[in-house]
Amino acid sequence: MYNPNSHNQIKVVFTGCVGAGKTTAITTISEKPPVSTEVKPSEASVIKRKASTTVAMDYGELTLDGGDKLYLYGTPGQRRFEFMTDILTKGALGLIVLIDNSHENPLDELDYYLNLNHRFLTDNPAVIGITHYDVASQPSVDDYYAALAERGDPWPVIHVDARSAMDVKLLLDTLLAVLEFG
Amino acid sequence: MSETAGVGVHASASALFVPASVGEDIMPSDPDGKSADSAVFCPDQGLLKALLQLETFPVALTANNVVLWLDPAKGLYFCPLTLERLIACCAPENLFAVEPMSEPELQRLVVQEKLSPRPLSSLVWYVVFKSSQGRLLQGTSAQDIVHLLRWPDLGLPECRNYVKLAAFMHSNSMALADIATATHIPLGSVYDFYNACYLTGLIEKVTNVQRHEKHIDGERQNLLKKIRNRLMG
Image 1 (cartoon, rainbow over the protein chains, first blue to last red):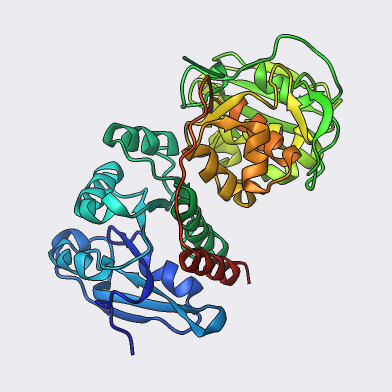
Image 2 (image 1 turned 180 degrees about the vertical axis):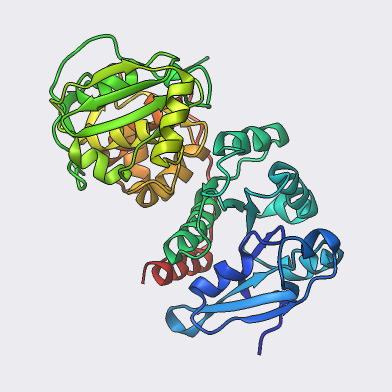
């Protein structure tokens, strides 16, 4: 039985705007069909972008050697559920921030999610994954690094396809490297 | 005091560094070029030479049956081939014809051929990485103290194998030889990674070693290893 509030869980949290690919990323690598809480969205800005969206959390898992589990949580994208972020990140190893590059203001979204998780990121790392880069190549990766530099954040930025297991694993592998050496 | 290859971390063609003199031949890429070669790496041939000599206006680069279009001012390139395929088609001795073109001409062609823009810095990074062959860039010593200013594009082919090295070099300023020892990564691979990052303006050379000692207890270390094993499995 999963309990997202448990401090003892080995977990990584995926966060980011609606449509960035959090549910897809977790679905792509979870070894069990992930638990998703997708419903018709209620926020006007979200209705325009998606027919259904996560309201509580997404949840997937990977079994490690020795039977331990790595839990993968996805936060809801709608801002009225932002209170879930604190609950889900408690005790997490780190944060994967997914940003939809085709969003109206992707750099504002980046800013928003880094601010929202400011307390968590004081002691824990993040990796930024840019999705839908094939649809919109602006802002560029350089623009993201410039935005991070302005904030004084050292996090790596990778453009990824949330449907690619290799890409999602790269995000996690990078998070591990930052945990180890960052 | 520090020295970087480019004018900043936003590597565009105009920010690329060209070593002063010419030397060794660039051999075809060896994906497992792990051991350090005592020969020096001089990026003075083939596609790499053409890329490092770009000015700001758009150009078409052509050799044999390979053609690619570049917009150095915008830091973009266009090519119907994947990066791996493009490199495989380019022999080190290829002489690339450089044909200037206007911005509207390039735009017309991009639309006509349905080409997607790709970062020029990623192309240069990968060409240098594949050309280095375990040789250290001319003008650099294994004792030079270096620091990775910014992460390279980890999504590039093979770059994902260097995540650990990138994280280490991003957090520490150390001599290349010491980086290889500390990370247990073969010196030749450290050279390949360093060369690619240096020529795309991602590295600064500094005067003092700064070692960021991160204490991770055994249990945590073991956990990270287990997760990494699972991701690779």
